[in-house]
Amino acid sequence: MPGIGRVMRRRTFLAASVLSSLACSGRGGGPLRKLRIGAPLGLGTAALYLSHELGYFREAGFETEITTFARAAEGTTALAGGKLEVLLAAQNPSWMNAIVRGVPIRVVAAREKFSPSCRRMAFLAALNSKYPDGLQDLRVLKRKRVIVGGGVGTLQFALTQHLAQAGLTLDDVVIVNLTGPDAMAALFSGSVDAMVVFDESLLPDNRPELVFSRGFAELCPNYQYGLILFGDSLRREDLSVGRRFLQAYFRGVRGFVQGKTPKFVKEFAEYRGVDALKMEHVCRDNYVTDGQVDLESLRLFAGWAFRHGYLTRQVEVSELVDLRFLNRHDA
Image (cartoon, rainbow, N blue to C red; front, side, top):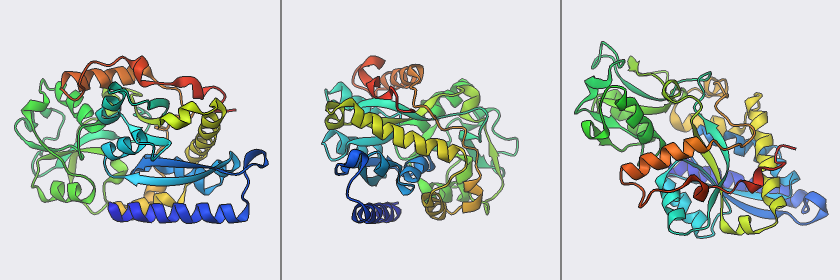
């Protein structure tokens, strides 16, 4: 993961330099406003890279610098410390706890959801040789070892909901924290019993026979997990600055949903060991195209995180959001 992160940063910085040398003025003839953006390493950031590659951010007056983060807490720390102005994040206790502590970062828009009309996402997978009867009844996982990403977040929340359908809780399984190729290797070797897979497009073609549970969208249709957060400095600027960023970002989202694909997708596919062409043709209906935030999704996750001891106190959804920037972002 660090390797591809460095590649992404080099590619982004080079592109920004080239754009600046070609034209050092942006919207309205003024200088480009540098904008530092943090993002996780995942397919969900494809629209961000598309907006960058096609020059949408530059047209909106920004020189963008994109940094990838392996862990949610790293992105939160960078945003809270002023090293970023924008963070693409998932539902996670790290940034919620930062807000509870008084850090002035906020959710300003939504970017991804679990769509019932799209591919299987946030589901459990296991070797058919271990569970020949499948994973329709998850009671078979009691006291079993289950991979759930690299820490507390959306996948652990999804696992809780999956287990609840079988009358189980997180205490009934042994949580294993692994990510990327290491997680896949553990699943395929049989050293763990099951794995929560974020997206079926990340499963390599050359894999042993697997069985799957239902996707999370069947349990909680259109639950929003991907969000955009602004840091204090951007929130304090004129609203037009943040709105221009969202306008450019969602222009890329709409282009991605309509079939445009950035170079990032090929690079990410190579890193995950999956066919890039197959990944280019996955369903893209899980992207939120207008940024509107589903407050109930935030409420569900915040309540779950508090009940499980991941938040220091119960948090109100109104504390987490700043929706002033959504106005006119899709104009």
